Structure formats: C-alpha cells, structure tokens
Image 1 (cartoon, rainbow over the protein chains, first blue to last red):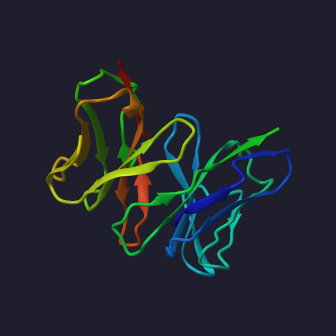
Image 2: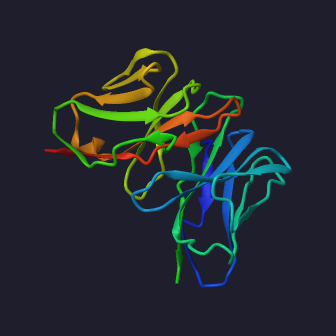
Amino acid sequence: DGGITQSPKYLFRKEGQNVTLSCEQNLNHDAMYWYRQDPGQGLRLIYYSQIVNDFQKGDIAEGYSVSREKKESFPLTVTSAQKNPTAFYLCASSIIPGPYGYTFGSGTRLTVV
Amino acid sequence: QKEVEQNSGPLSVPEGAIASLNCTYSDRGSQSFFWYRQYSGKSPELIMFIYSNGDKEDGRFTAQLNKASQYVSLLIRDSQPSDSATYLCAVLRDAGNMLTFGGGTRLMVKP
C-alpha cells in the first residue's frame, strides 16, 4: 500500500545533540513537507521540497536542516541550535501543482531530556 | 493578524446534533480550502476540500465557502462521539500547493 512512513515514533534527545527524523514515501509525490506541532497548536511549516536536490525554508526553519537526495526521502535533522525542540513532527507529501490535499505520515514525537 | 484563524474551542455538542466549525482567512486571493480531522496523538487526515463558493456535501459533512466574507465552515450532521477530534482548516497559499493551517478547533461530542 502507498503511504508515508515516519520513524521513529518516539525520540528522546539530550541537550546539545543533533537528531535525525526519517520520512519515506512511496506515493511518487514530488513535494514533501515538514511541520511542527506544539500542544494545542496548529501546524507550522519548517521546510519543504518540490524537487530532488532542492528545498526551501518554511516559517520556522532556524535550528533545523533537511536534504532531498531521493524523491522518496526527506529526512529532517533537529540541531542543537534549536532551543525548544520538544514537539510533534509531521511529514507530508503531495502532488504538485495543486490544489491537492496532503498525505501525512504518522508523526514523530521528540522529547528533550 | 494570523493568516488562518479558528476558534480553539472546545466546541461541545450533544450526540446527534449538528456541529458547526468556522474558519476565516486573510488572503483574499486564496482559492482552495481544506478540512482535516486530527485525533489526539495522531496525524491529520483529509476530510474535504472546496474551491467554489457555496456548499459541498460528502456524507455527514458539508463544507461551505464564502469568498466575499473570507470564511469557510464545516458542518457535521448527526454528530457522533467518534467525531470528537481537532479539526484543522487549511488554505492554499499558491500554485505550488503550499498550505497554511489554522490552529484547529477541538470538537467534543457528548453521548
């Protein structure tokens, strides 16, 4: 079945560590997105990519980095520069150009310990 | 002013009633609008999208769009406890399929 797979489901990070969240899709979608969701809040865009080897900053890119070496994969690294990384991270993909809804992965819950 | 605004709720309705969820947006040029349902701890799932003024119905769900007043709403008829979730409104930013999400409205359907 086609879909988006995020891993791990839960992730714990120590202060000062970089961590990488995985996102893989087999929907043949060109566009992929990373969102952050804080408790009781909506989704805020971190990074997005519409083509391999190209990506753009979203509204809250500071402290994060991404790569898009393959169409299927869009990993997100949360660096030590991100001061408040505890959140629920969602990866999504879509057909472009729109308008089409996004397909979301199941999310990764990151906690700083 | 936020680009997409929703009342955070919670909106509480009795089982069997109609739940009405509202969303306003600031960009008058917005063309397409999406409603997502998100259960606690889960990822959002697409319920409906609408891009023409008026109503669009899908089962118990009706999306309503009024571009002149810049609001979009979602009606849920015969509300069930399983409809209890957060409903996110999203607006298409541009032709590149970028969506801007509202903060969501939490709906509680009481048996």
